[in-house]
Image 1 (cartoon, rainbow, N blue to C red):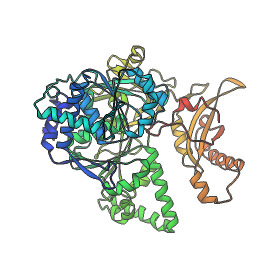
Image 2 (image 1 turned 60 degrees about the vertical axis):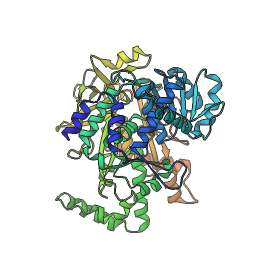
Image 3 (image 1 turned 90 degrees about the vertical axis):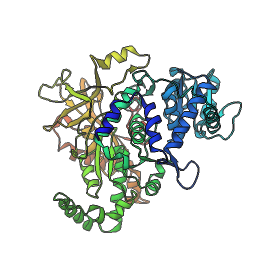
Image 4 (image 1 turned 120 degrees about the vertical axis):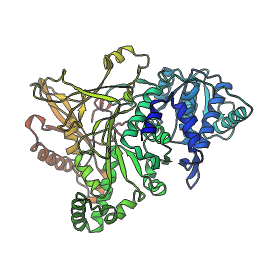
Length: 576
């Protein structure tokens, strides 16, 4: 363990990882990918290393992109990873983009970033062609095309050209020196409470995150990951791809969210990185299957018995619940959840089947990890302690409730960003004397574990100064069978200028309604009344000022980020 820590401390940049560690891993499998084939194929570390050097060489020698910004957009793939690494390890600045954004937003981000090259998957070609006339002097590279054309270059043919240059003695790319403290990564935030900001990160930031990951999970060298979450998101890329490949792990690439069940059985991962929304859906499916089997009572008893035995060192859960385990490939040891708080009750339900949860907390601006639970410290309802090399404190200065220990979470460490791209004003708002002000609210429990309360911008402040954290109420409302998701906010009371009406906006669980009522579903009014009755029951469990006073039912889905968080600021602009 100490050898790896020393190696991390002495890394000049991530280029060292590609050059030295990938060479060491050699023919070990780095990626499992379908790439249009029915079966997963293996790609070795040696091949990935060669492709990174080949792409970097051609980007420099053919397109003269030294120091320029290169955008990448597409599905999770080895080619996406190669583009990212080749760019930051000797070419220029990488700009990962969210493939779910509409054309006008992609165009806006490309113009803001001043990207001189766009690498994209064939699924995004139609959108790229749509915005192409509005961009000037840009190199277009299609990850999946077989031939060069007047409009775009073939990724694979460029790799071949780059390899030929290397074979004939070119060292242009190999000789590039990388400043680990320089701006190399431009990430646009998903913007749940405001418009996207450009986060500037460095190799130093990513190495700090890798060190933190190693302290939490040093066993990862023997792990197989399954990459499910969008690759452009720093949570997925930093942990699965940067840390995974640093350790020499095997990374299976999921074909897409609708293929999770199939791919997880094929890849048989040891670890899955997920968001709460995915776990909630998985748990609902498991419970539905159990209910339909007619064995719900028996399984309930079995869960109690096996959970009790596990506490005294006799863990039979993986054997007793083998059928549930097999739905995850049979090898799954850990589920690492992040991006939003995970309900304590949901953790307990899933752990009863033999799964173990780790939780991470972070932000794009912190590369991303700030805190995390570990194999030795897994306290449900918390996100664990500050990760290695990171100092976390609670700033109570903005808390108007003097009886509360909840304050803004602030962070200092090598993981903290350089600043926001071309936005000095917003940078000064969040970076103060080396501390990053996250905008998240939380507190430490008696054992020093961090508990997240919510976003400061989402907090509802009553006229008498009481703070209401929407996430606490949403977790309860989301347990109502008729409800798919909820968003709690304070609506202005037109009759009382200072008062806010605590309002719950919900979407319906259409699958539950269809399964329960079949061809004779309740009317809109009846559904409203049933949900309202359940909300009144929740209200009785809370102090009066937190009580939900108004219910809104949405017909369409919430607007979300790619990590399935509701974009509140956009939702609040809409009328139900």
